[in-house]
Image (cartoon, rainbow, N blue to C red; front, side, top):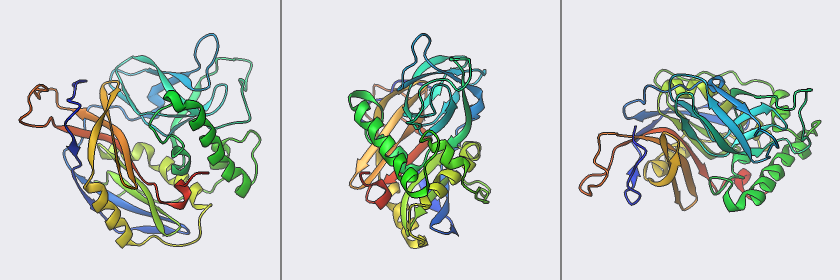
Amino acid sequence: MNREIHRHQNRPLPQLHVGHGSHHGALSIFPLWVDSPRVTGLDWKASSIRTAEREGSPVVGELVLHNSTTRPVVALEGDLLKGGWQDRMLARSLLLEPFEARVAEVFCVEAGRWGARSTDASAAHEASGRRSALSVRRGDASGGSGERGGSQQSEVWQRISRFENTLGATASSSMLDHLDRSAPLEARPLDGQRGVIIGIGGRVIGAELFGNTAGLRSRWQGILAAAALDAQLAPQRRTTAHDARVFTRHLQAVTLEDGGDAGLARAVRSQQGRLRASGIVQTNAHTNMHTHTSAPTASIIHLTAFDDAHPLLENA
């Protein structure tokens, strides 16, 4: 895998194929197949990443991620980490080298607690593949904490407060507490499926694509639970297959621009009208990155796409 990629060359998405949807109240889910070779050699298990607070004085917007395995491990934007001084979600996706330890950007998803739950103030977080709701992840609109970190964190808390106000308060305003008290959704990914389109309240809100079926399976229950939580804020309307196909065509037409370093991977992003996408790609190590005659090939490890016009993605 090559960390270098020409910043001025865009990469189109592979061909996408949408299947028949299933409907669960206000939530509709549509399977996606990706017409490209699968990404191999990666560890997708969230439990392979050990997570801890910064040594000395913990920081709200930072955690230390440690790859405990001999393979590169995927850490995804929107992954939830329970424990430590407060529950967090990852702000940006990373591909960690074997045994690498790295400080990662995070957002707090538990506004009412700052301190360890146990007598061990350095207690590690639990990473189990749970995902943050798309409406809450929308609070990280610019793809990282950066200069807007404070305002983005406030927006994340505001979006979680909608669950507090509508569904009832939790002990520490934790998104994970809202997920814990929601009923599980019974659905399984289909053979070869590598993505999912999420419709809520009669409109597509977004989609997630993975580099292989193992990646999707590793986050499947987390995606469904988070989507079902968002659906509790929406009217009981089905999203049509036509809308899912239209969204897929728009997504298919985007080109991804380089977004900088993401460990062993490269970050990518796109903003075209109301459609916004971000993720990480694995680049071809055998491509000559200094030539202009052919674009470097890149395989999507993970990509999230949002329709920013969806009511749940409007400003809280």
